[in-house]
Length: 114
Length: 110
Image 1 (cartoon, rainbow over the protein chains, first blue to last red):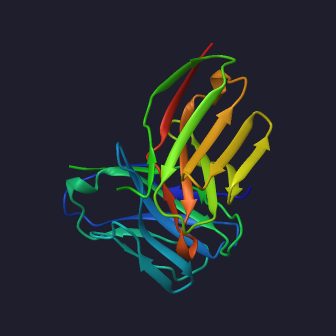
Image 2: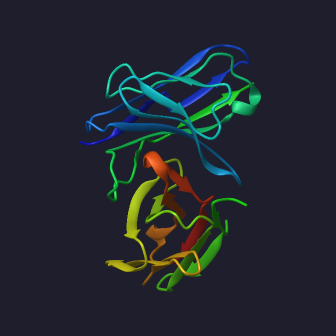
């Protein structure tokens, strides 16, 4: 089954404790991206990657890191989480190009930082 | 001003009603527009896309883009309780980026 898999689904952590949210896709997509979703603000892009070893900042990158060492994986790293990073996080992937390629989203990771 | 604006709702309708969901956007440079559906505790899933202006129909769903007024619409005919979800409009920007509206929550009551 074609899918984007995120882990964990739920995570409660304490301020300052480094964490990683994993994302993996099995569709050979070049493009991968992380979004956070907050009430009233919608989906906002954190980081994206056009292909292996090519990453760039989205609209809200502060406090996050990413890496793309393999095409299928795109982990999101919070080096020192803070309460304002409490949110619902989505990983998404797609083919690249001008055509009508939409994203395939993962099921989400609900992060609470206390 | 946000690039894509959407009324958050909730929009409550009885089963069988025709639903109209709308978005406005501020940048005319982009050609692709999409609608995503998001059920509670799930990731968004692509429902429909349209290119440039005009209508596109898929079963009970019709997507419409009016580039002259920068308006994006999704119509749902014969709405069902299973259509209850949050609907997100999006436009495709540069480098594959999608810019999303905040979503409209739809509730269809039996």
